[in-house]
Length: 165
Length: 196
Image (cartoon, rainbow over all chains, first blue to last red; front, side, top):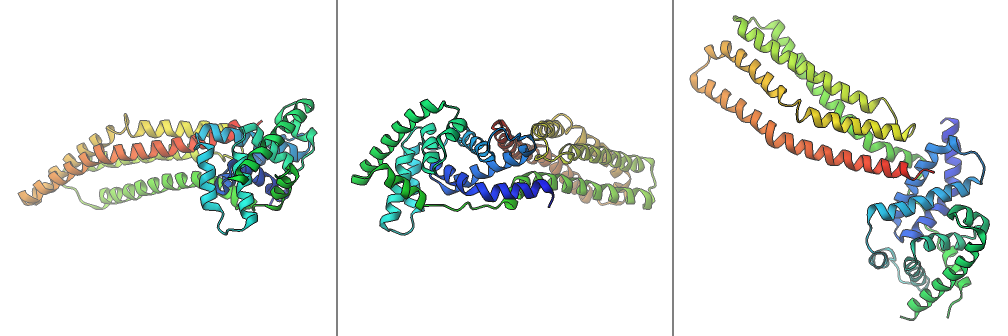
């Protein structure tokens, strides 16, 4: 294995889990999330030489992942998010427990958000610093704080609404 | 009523595992291109076997007439030309690795797709015509030693096979290959378009 492959392996092992969770939160589907993860890291591998360390490597990877997710949904003309979420709830939760039900409700609620909001909130949930989220999503930090506050409220409302049904 | 902190702890307690490793990921990306390369190589291998068989026939069989020699010669030349064309196409794909220069690789895939299209449309008709001419000249000598019904059976079979290849088989192959390459080009373009 050459130097570049080794470096890539380290980067993949360190970041793939978080990126996969981001893709999973965005699509609500493990297979689609795996496809997106694959596309993201393929781009990382191709462009590793071009990375100039102006930002953190994780920020750079997140930005690629966010673009990948947004383009994926548009180009593939996927099913409506409601249908997709129902499909996930039916197929992904094998064992009924209270926690599994809550997790399913959470993904269902995230799926009801706008595309960009879904990505921003998954980064918030993963506790990425606001400055980093701002850089990844291309929004000023001030605007981002307002936006995050609104998305948090919306997600909490959606989650509570689903929990009551 | 749940608060946002509850949602956050729920999110963090659920950590789905990626279903792919770094090695598998790169291997998978290269797999589809390799399948097309392999198919293209098999195509060339088939043509080379035909070329060897016809050459052996030309060198070892004692033809009595010049027509049979010319017939086999035409077939041999046609197969050789098409083998070279197939090799040229194969070279378009095998020269480069997608992971090294994606945009240039996509251009090559498009070039390959266009070249394949030409081979199975405009250039295709020269192939059955030349093979038919060669076979007619070859049969002029060999038919002399055959029963009339055998001659008829060979002519009917050869004609039907050529028509089948030129119509149904050619169109089906062209359609399948076009779809496959379009999907592959679309996939690679999607991957490249998202690079910052």
